[in-house]
Image 1: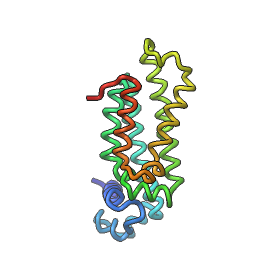
Image 2: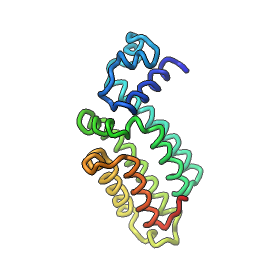
Image 3: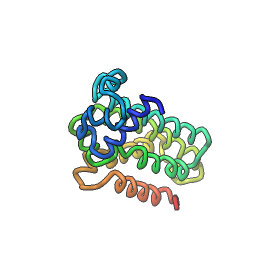
Image 4: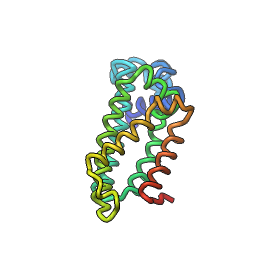
Length: 189
């Protein structure tokens, strides 16, 4: 593993454990087994590193998503593939501490994450309508359908809602999937 990857892996671990603000560059240096000078050679600041780690994660999720759509995966396959990846590899963003830090300290990074997922939601909504031409939902205007799906995700799967209701990201996602299973008569078991 190269130096940059060691730094990003160690940063993800620290973020999953302590959120975005609960660790120092000294601790990261020790965990990644690189000098602090090396850290700053790759990343100008802690915030630049955090943003790079988020960008790297979004890029990898984007590639996975594009592969699923290109392969013609159905909604069950998309959810069954994306959600476990999000809950495992994305725990550095979805832990309660990280969500709190996003809400209070890094709202611009949450906006970046939200823009990324909004684009993917729109693709999935369009995909759902196209792949279910005989379904009752096929009679819904695609713009309305996409807006409903996007708004529901934005309202529920966000730091404010999760933290204010004492939930975890995983609990919210599980309930969200159950809701859409019922709506689309979809079994993910």
